[in-house]
Image 1 (spheres, rainbow, N blue to C red):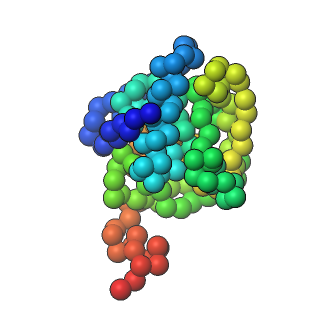
Image 2: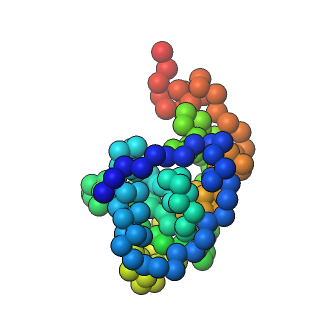
Image 3: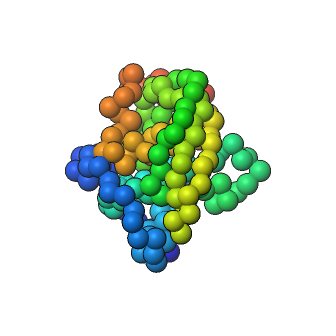
Length: 169
């Protein structure tokens, strides 16, 4: 495994649509392993392949609803993910490893069901609520060349961010 550089806003790869994964081979496994290491080192909750420079439909998301697991154990690998249903609504703070230091208010579904394949090509379905649902939507948006800043109702000022996070002076 190796850490990969996270591409940041302004890099044209983040605006391109990713291609489906068709080969479930060692190269894909290495990508997913590297993404895992990169995500854990960056202390994030999700990462899409384009964020590390690969235009393939692969993401990893931490299932934050499973608080009894370690961060590494919370990671779900999703290859060729597709949202098949969603309901409810949540509006809250959202950020991105590719847009460091910027946070906005974004509305997403409260509950999401995703159909995907694992690293070996086997299909499965997974559900997420709250932050996990938000992450599924956010990371799948990356696969279509979209950043959260495009749909943010507004971008938070540093003062608003401090206040929301309880960091008053």
